[in-house]
Image 1: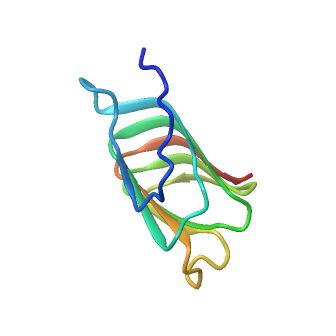
Image 2: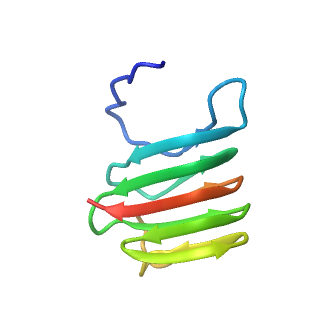
Length: 115
């Protein structure tokens, strides 16, 4: 089991997260995001069972899923059983500081909330 590491103190300009070595899928993942400066791309490669992403209140986010998805919940709004999809929080297009999240594979459950 991998032990958690202390997070970086500097601004995040983007990230690519890959599944554990030797596999092409995630069972579960939790991303807790800080306030972005500019448009910050995050790519999650491979398929996954479930992922929860928490962002600060008032921060916009866009989500693109390249594979299929069983359930997506963004800020309490659920979208079920869809093929590839793009969805975003209100005002994401106009927000200069936001996250652009891409999942390259399929997902069972994706949850994005503000905290």
